[in-house]
Length: 186
Image 1: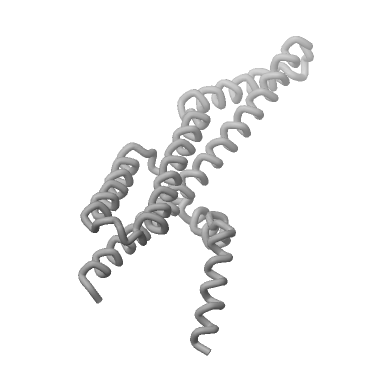
Image 2: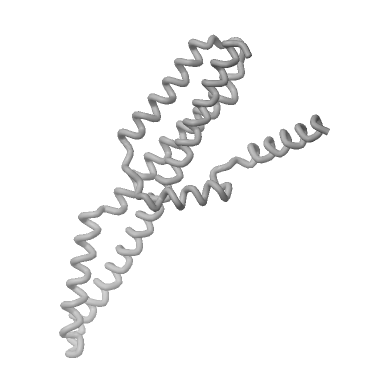
């Protein structure tokens, strides 16, 4: 093995690490965004329905509702305060934006690994600088991204294992490589 191919192999290995890391990170962030979005809609919907019930009951001046209306009003106030304090819609947006940034980095790294790295006309020094730049981008994204909840990793891992983050063309290419290898071995 030449020094040149050894350096390229190490660069490729690092690119694969960045791809794997960003895959899990962006899937976790998407899972967290989806959960926050659902929470926002659920709490917002319940709050709206309870507000309507409390308002119409108060206007109806039904004697039986004299205890229920204040209780519903208290629940509405608590849910509204929760939405205002926790801001699930804003958190969902932050998670989704960070997920998109990590997904873009993954795609840029894949393009580097599959298209630029194999080119023989590129000097190793330029390739080293490119992989360093990709790694630095990952570090910056980590600093500026919201921390996904721990449960999001489990959901992300299951989704990845089920092939949700895989391109069909990559599956077809892997199958073709396997068939070609079997033909060469036989």
